[in-house]
Image (cartoon, rainbow, N blue to C red; front, side, top):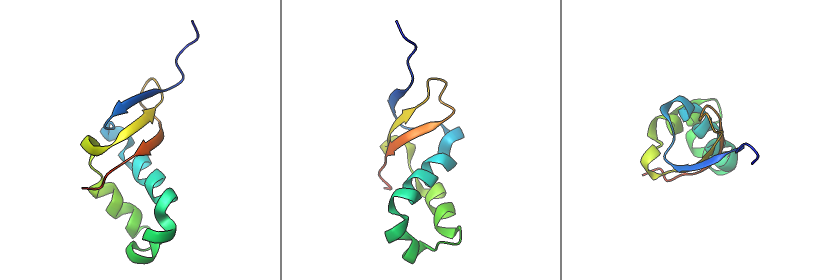
Length: 74
């Protein structure tokens, strides 16, 4: 059986919080950047408010790299 290349789980480990914010900002930065700022402030804000309990994530098997995220901010 081939090695599993990724896993899906509810929530994300704290170690990938910055990756989660980056993915989210990459996806929605065009809209959010105008309001939150494109100078790093928006990314830092997202990093603080993302709630892992409301996220569905794709991670590498050792959970050190976030491959994708479906997140709620509240």
